[in-house]
Image (cartoon, rainbow, N blue to C red; front, side):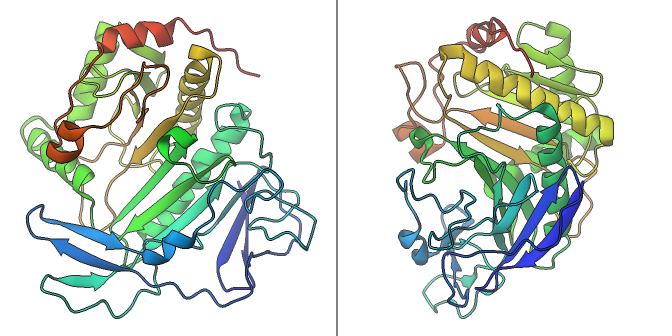
Length: 361
């Protein structure tokens, strides 16, 4: 993996990654010349026992621009505002212009509840310069590079004093709230461990203390032994519809043996992770012969300076909204009480995905 770091005119950082060395002479563009100076803060929710992020400047972010105006699409037209340049590179990462967390956060309001500056980072990961592509349609070598980029960002962001958890994710499709029609994901570097991974880690800690292995190791082993819900099985990585799936077509990708993060995987493990991911995404798109809307969440070990021997990398992929009456809306029980009601059987949905033939380029 090759990397070159540039600075945008507004002060934000742009990192270019490539399979081949990245030539000098590429300049970092920006939609604005004004100095980047966002602010954000946190408010404590006493009843939920968790932080809520406030970043009102996000109301002004770009939303579904027409095809002729896409700020993520590379362009050689200097009159068109853009975030990434044209040039010989494969993946671009830059500071989000509308971050919910930023190292520049300061002076939170004084309220009747605790508040803190919303420190941390929000980055955009542009998967490819081709605006018509998708993560699943990219060649396998390109996905392998993206996995390396995610690992690089995990290590660099996780080393910061103001970052306790690095969370890479992708929202795909307007059905799940995507605001730009370009293949990209995001990375949130939180100053705290978010509630969902914190709860998972707590459960893993208890199991690890008594068994010396992780819950996810147990689950992956059980899924592989059963076999009925497995979509990909390699020497080091597996992909499957979990027996406890909350969403129709929910899929998990995880190493067979405990690995705390993508950075902790060796080269073979990262390549397998990319192959498993491509397999799942091609099955998704092949299911109904149309782009499949999903959320992909990559959970890794916290980076708050403590040891987490029970941490086990996993990617979770799930649709969040209805399409052709086959997927699921979040409703009162899920949103208000956090209790999911599954309308479909994981084995049935796994069978549908298993029936989709996948052919790599």
